[in-house]
Length: 191
Image (cartoon, rainbow, N blue to C red):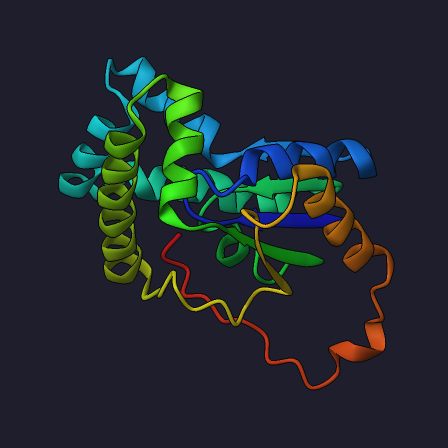
């Protein structure tokens, strides 16, 4: 089984993906962890590395190729990244999108990174705008188009265990007969 968990920074992707992987005994691969490792290896903060990626598209393309290869080659996996749903469009059994208001996400990031919440929110919004622009330019993906996802959840409304319960229910109650008439997502091979 291949599950994808996507959403903006601070939406609860990592928490939920880890819980899903544990619940279904799947491997968890995090695009965010890989991005932060790449940034750290080069001596950048994630925000600085993101800005560098605006000037050097190979940073994004390298990360996205790695994640796409993981999706194509992998099985029994939860793939988590902003583009996971798109990168694994043909392979994924379920694609989930998580979101929350910017202020909530900013507070979560501030708690995690020890920053001022207003600063974290501002940085996150700048990062999102930059990434959305690059996804459109590189791959023709409108990150705000949620029609490819099986389920979208506002994580500000529920605790992590309740979000997990919703996603687990979706997976366990899946009816393959409902797939008829689905229009598959087509990707160019730009990844």
